[in-house]
Image (tube, rainbow, N blue to C red; front, side, top):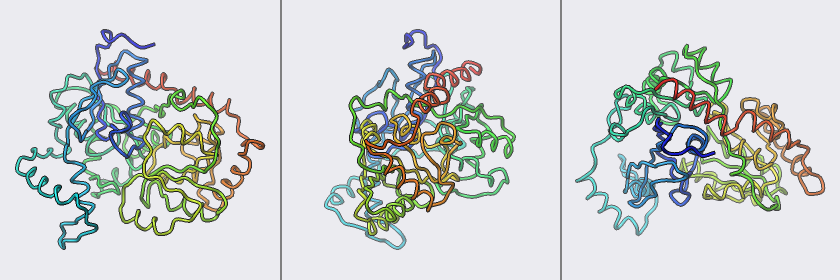
Length: 420
């Protein structure tokens, strides 16, 4: 039952700058697990608890909705961000200067960027300093997602304001052993080790996604984190009508170390009679170019699907393929989404023993040969005449017990209430 707004005396500032496409599908073309998880939690807090979430996001447009699902949105307006990205994709200033591709849009984009430099905003301070975009916000506690520069600024802001901060781990790379060894490095996402250490050591509470993260956090850093598994709202992922399940679905981005689309393509090459649909968000242009040159005929590449249409993508899949790397993944939300839509899962590894515990699919124990065999078996067994041998009642019960949005929201609310 939705709480009355007047009872929501405590407000949690939730900072996920890139989450707007998960909230307003037309707002962008890239949505990750961090963003979907943060927004799902915000909705759960608003619906099931007395905590009032205030959600902070970045936008590239002037006109934006101020409230979605009764959650107020606060914006950092970066009106030229898309133009800057297009420009950097087309031209590298070097040295040396390199032109990757030309476009007539550059004729008006370049002068606009030049004018913008004359009146550009003051750059953000070092990530271990408070974020000026947040200092005037009226909140009682803060939440950052992932051990990164954005979250470090959230933690620093909370410290400056004398407020508690919650740091939600989003990746096993957030607990890189080199951080505990005091090694200075820049990780695969461009994050400084010093900034990551600051966020981990100064957050009031660290929230872990899995048993592994909780154990790693204690063993390496001496920090006792709280285990709160990723939430999902199954009703959001149910489709009203049956859909013909006609492909193997893969979701991720162009990279070689995290989502690893190249491994999914290798599986597809081994199974040329099975259709694959890969929704791949932009990330690494060189990887994208390499992959585009070697796509077999049984793969359909889709660059973007609005987030509110994703339940239909899962519903139309005979099975879901996961090639995520446990060194970088935390717990992939796509596994919850597949399970909620009763789409069998074939994964290269079993994150947090999810498949073993709930029975929603199979792990290949990091063997590409076994993964290909599993995909072929599930494809053949997943027809209408031979349904996949999965107990979906058991899966639904597991999701309700361990990934309930209500339970997750209440667990987070309990931490906030104890610290403000």
